[in-house]
Length: 298
Image (cartoon, rainbow, N blue to C red; front, side, top):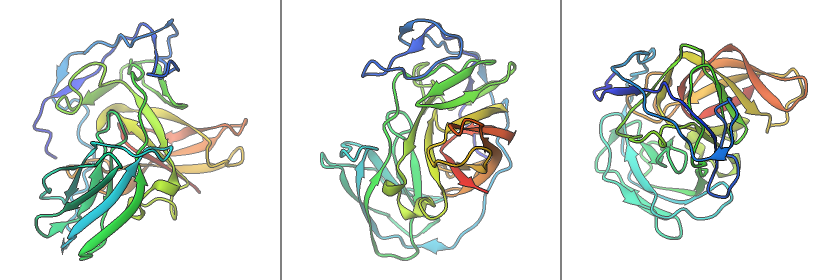
């Protein structure tokens, strides 16, 4: 896989609980502290310490995806303006377009592509997604689709602690490394952990939502590789009964994807609903990359 840029390993320190723009808790480093701004610091630079995963460089036929229209909203249904979108295949991408004030955007692909997807969201202020497009569609109207707003600042990713955001928790091993692509997340504040749930009613069909998955959570910093894989806890928003076992999937939003196929999902862990019925916890496997997470009952 191509990780031509040098990756930044986060061995971070956090001295306080972050606060989001509304004054609420944006997450916790797991070590307590008073409310305030995230004090995470950038760690040493490492070149691909964790590895790139098994890789999913599958081939696909050329598809003429034509033009795509969509209205982007947040998790509450409010229009998202100035969000950059692309149509990207595994070998070529369109030039970017931006949503209008009403959240509407129209974008055309420059040529036939392998596995064209409508890519939207930056994985920083809002979740990043890649919804596969139908074959040889000419014109596709995705209707109203959402990407959730991510809290800011996020929670520090400190080895040996639990980072929490919007009820989603990841617990890092004492010797954990977290590799973030610096071009996407240039500052320590950008590299903090953030999470938000995507309402399935606003998920495009090409995302594999609704018909297949019972819940989807957008996680950031998107694409950050974690080794060893982190333990994951999610709020039980599907309402499963206590003791229900589930499969936990990660989503491939980059064409150079090592842990899930581009535009697809791959199971990485098994979870179980705790005895209170409130949370889903990993019982086998873990989160090898910070990415969108899907949940499906077994």
